[in-house]
Image 1 (cartoon, rainbow, N blue to C red):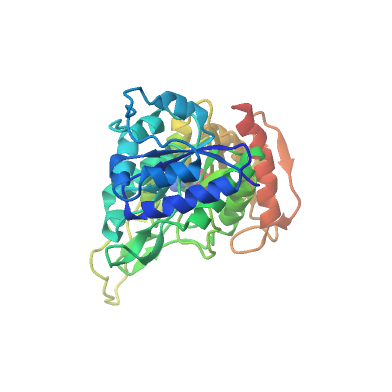
Image 2 (image 1 turned 90 degrees about the vertical axis):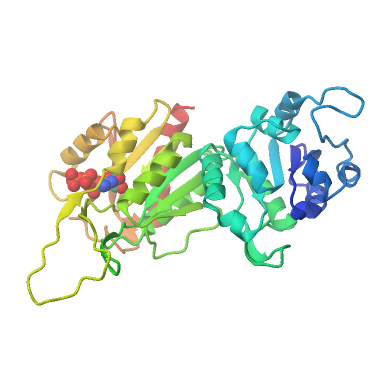
Amino acid sequence: MRLSGKRIILGISGSIAAYKSASICRLLISEGAEVQVVMTESAIQFITPLTLSVLSKNPVATGMVRPDQTWENHIEKGLWADLILVAPASAQTLSAFAEGRCENLLQAVFLSARCPVMVAPAMDHDMYLHPSTSHNLAVLKSRGTLVLDTVTGELASGLYGEGRMQEPETILERVCLHFSNRNLPLSGKTILLSAGPTREPIDPVRFISNHSTGKMGIALAQALQESGAHVILVAGPLQRPVPKGIEHVPVETAAQMLMECLRYFPGCDGAIMSAAVADYRPVNPHDQKLKKNGAELNLNLEPTADILATLGQQKSANQVLVGFALETENELEHAQSKLERKNLDLIVLNSLRDVGAGFGTDTNKVTLLFRDKKTVEFPLLSKDETARRIVDSFIPLINANA
Ligand code: CTP
């Protein structure tokens, strides 16, 4: 049994998907978990506390005050649990969690929890896609809440679209994965990763970009995930699929990448910036497609913000920041000065002089430089192996801050 001895609070909020919470509860119990259920007033409209109490073999808590006028101790519940799973998490509950409201027992338990919280959103397509909901989910993710994706399908409203809660069996797998990852070196850590190129528009159909495919970034995402980290991947257009379980935040321009990195960085234990960010972008991109007229065309470019350096300025003492450097001469010297200038803990140096290292290849050859000027040179390796070695060097830095 994969959840033997694990204590889980199953939070149920008001959504038609609440009828599936009975199956979730039964599945958790069948894997050996001890389950306490907390329901909101509106959840009770969809499924009875009696059903959940029979399945969980525990009384169900529905309000701050029990029917016998004793106090339902939310602090105790928050301390008791190894995981709080809120499934379904309605738009209303997610908004309350993101704003730190404390209007019902479930919200109070969320606020007082010291354990990880996983939410399985469930709502109608338009509510799910509303910017307020996206904002609330981004806020929660940035603070370390584990947010499950929804699935696209038929919704209770009769509409078809995004917003359907994951099936109980999938939720169970995510819970089991969460616990099985716990003994890995980056368990419980959230790492921000930038990858891929950026695209800087010239007009609605043209852009300036580079040859980055995102291969190295995807390899790093995988290596971080295999070490137990929760990975938030802020990436420009990638030429490879993003592995399951990685939080993918797609962006196009350097400005969008900066905005998303700034949004997520404060909630992260560390960041690895592997994106090939455009250093310049066209000033005032044209609204309409540029017409050719045979004459010379000059593009005015302005510098983009240096995302890595911006994070370096904002980095707190317990965050680890890693950058990449692509140098063509005096490589070690330039990379070391970049590390210091941008306030990094580790810099991964790529030399264009090395055959087999660079854009689009399956191999890479890098040298790591640390703050204390220690260097570690790797041979030509597959990008996957290079990523694993970078992560192996990153782990002690993260754990030194724990
Ligand atoms: N980077 C960034 N934002 C930018 C440019 C670069 O975050 N606008 C990050 C990349 O993700 C990578 C590192 O900075 O981690 C790459 O630096 P490099 O390619 O060497 O470029 P620059 O820092 O711009 O250095 P140089 O002064 O040599 O051009």
